[in-house]
Image (cartoon, rainbow over the protein chains, first blue to last red):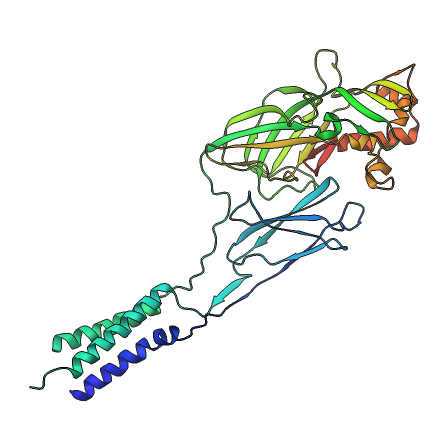
Amino acid sequence: MKKYYTFLAVICLLVAWPAIAAYAHGVDITYGNTSAIQLTAKFDTGEPINGGDVVIYAPNEPAKPWGTGKCDENGSFTFTPDPVLQGTWDVQVRQAGHGGMVHIPVAGSAIQPVSTGFTTAQVVIMSASVIWGLVGTALYFSRRKS
Amino acid sequence: MKKLISMMVLFIFAVVALAGCGSSGQEPANEENNAAGAGMLQFTANPEDFVRQGFVTKDGWKLSFENVYVNLANVTAYQSDPPYDPDTGGEVSGKVVVGLEGTSIIDLAEGDENAFPILVAEAVEAPAGHYNAISWDMTKIATGPAAGYSLVINGKAEKGDRTIGFIIKDENEYGYIGGEYIGDERKGIVTEGGTADIEMTFHFDHIFGDADTPTDDELNVGAPGFEPFAALAEGDTVDVDMAVLKEKMSAEDFAKLEVMLPTLGHVGEGHCHAVVK
């Protein structure tokens, strides 16, 4: 019976170990495979829109600019959309009273964010496991011998 | 004691099972424009500061405008999917369409130099969503002093010690289809109970050129300017229509005018697909 209790305590500690590790100088590093978008803006004549004003609209808030910028001397502009915001991204380029807009679909399969962190629910459950394991272990060792 | 052990074992299984069900924590954002309901969509016409404040042409004439009449017909706004591309042309694939009945004679010179765009009409119960395309025709006015013309430009031109009053009339009819408004703000987004506007913009510098733009700019190279009109003045007045201009203006200048007139219609700074009807 004593071996059984020891085994049980070890199981509790193993289950709770990630939570203990998370609270000891934890570092939550995330990364994602993002896809940058490069666009090139030219006038009808083929001349690049050097220094053209760029306004980016994300799919979740079409009325509010998500970002702004300027084209380089070749009319090029590069940005990386937020991978969480899937849908059509609209980018407007203007200069000298003339401009246009391009509509860029950003699909879920193209961008897949990945995180090494735990969810809040997981952390709470693991913390509860630690506490429960400690209480159980304490009860085991403090029991009266019959 | 056995009861406590049983509870611990059950708890461990529950913890392991629940932890395995954890989500990745990243949910995709919903696509835009799932709005429901209706709001107000205002159709406006904007001659820009060129007409409201006057401007100096590419050949140095200072223009001011008394009246600029256009006759707008078949004005229609679309929730276009896919977004309309004026370079490709063709019809608009509009899932939701709001159109105005009848025609509207608009004086684009109405108001002072800081006037807002002119309200043409309102659609009170426009389905919510993004109206990202618009089409309209400029047709001949049926009655009144501008009858028979789709566009009448009445103004004054000054250069040095010379002043010319001019009336330029266009008996041709045009059709415009534009994509999304291009400008400082995004237009045409109707929310439930809200008000949005969609604009028909007119670029008169395309006819006369603009002294503030480099002379070798595409705009000034293509625009006839005002000098070809001034050359047709009788006394201090120019009163011409397209038939007269074709007869009296140089072939080169008239060809430029024919090319540039259909480019008057814009959506903000975005150009339209235009046809001469």
